[in-house]
Image: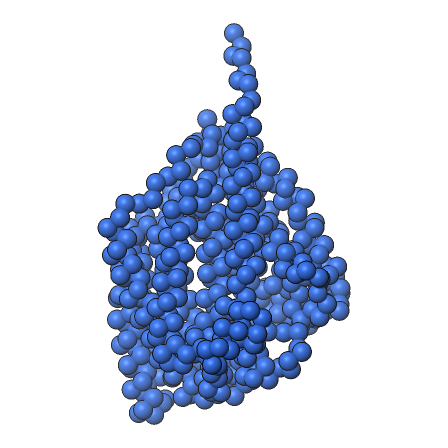
Length: 486
C-alpha cells in the first residue's frame, strides 16, 4: 500500500486563523485611516472614520462566521475577502494615489467624494453580510454535520476514475479549444456568435467541464493515495489553464485554476505546505504575466487576429513591471469592484425595479446600463463592463439596496453552500469547487443577470461526473477477483 504524507498546513485552529486574519485587517484599516485623514476635508474625514469604525465592528462580527471547518465557512471567506480586499483596501489605496484610480476606471471622471462614499458603502455591505454570517454560524452549530456518503471508493475504483477522467478530458479539450480558436468563443469583443447559444456551451466546456474532469482526477488520485498521479493531474490543469488564457485572453484563468485546486485539497483534507507553496508560486506567475495577458487581449480583441500573431505582437509591445507595486496594482485592480463603483457613484446611476428585473430576461439590466450610460460605449459595442457587486446593488436600489442587498446576498450564499454540504455525492468537493468559483466571479464582477448557463453547466458537469464515478465503481465491483497464486 502506498503511503502518502499529508501534513495539514497551517496547524492552527480555524478559529485562530480567522482571528489573525481579522486582526491584520483591522490593523491595516486604521493605518490607512491615519495615512489619509490629513489629506481630506473635515466632512470626508468624518465619513472615513465612521466607515473604519463600522468595518472594525463588521470584521469582529465576521470572525464568528469565519471560524469553523472550511467546508462550513469557505463561502463566508470569499465574501469577506472580496468586500474587504476588493473595496475597502482599494479605496484607501486610490484615495492616497488618485492617478492609479483614474487609470483603473478607464479615465471615467470621479472625485474624492465618490471614493469616500464608496468606502462607506463597502463598510455597510461588510457589516450587513457579517451579521448574516454570524447568525448563520450560530444556527448551524445547533445542527449535526452532514453525513458522509457512506460508500467507500476503493483504490482500484479510484484508479479507474482517474484514467476515465483523463481520457474524457483528452477528448473534450481539443473540441473546446478548437471552438475558441476557430469561432472566437470566449474572446472579448468577438462580434460573430454561434447559433442556439452554442457559444455558451463551448465556453463552459472550457470553464466548467474540463476543470471538473481534472479536479475529479485530482480527487481520485487522493482517494488512491497516489501522489504522482495527483501531481500529473495538477500539471494538466495548469497547462490547460495557460492554453485557455492564451486562446481566449481570459486573464483570470490561472487564478481560477489555482483557487479550484486549493479548494479541492482543502475540502478533501489534503492541503499541505507543498500545496501552499504552489499556490504562492502560481499567484506570482499570474501577477507577472498579467501585463502580457492584458496586451494580448488588446491585440486579440474581436478575434480578427490569429492567436499566434496576437501573442507575438503582445510579447513585443508588453513592458515588464518595473517595481513590485507596478506588478501588483493591475493584478489587484482586476479583482476589485472600485473601478466600476466609483464611476457609478459619480453618475448616480439608478434603474427602476422593473428595468432591473428585465435584465434577467434579456433586457437592459445594470450590466448593460453600466456599459452604455456610465462608461459611454455604444449600444452595439461587443463589450460589457461588469458593474461589480456593490455597483449592481447601488444601481438596483441605492444606499438601501446596498444595505439590504448585501444581507440577501449573504443569505443566498448560505443557502447555496448549505445545499452543497448536504449533497450525498462522491464528487461533492468538485461541486463545491465549481460553486466557489462561481461565487468568486459574481462577488468580484457583479454580473448577476447572466446566471443561466453559468449555473446550469457546473450542475450538469457534476451530475455527469457523479454518474461516471458510480459507473467506474460498479465496473470495478463487477470484475472477478484474481485468484491468489500459491
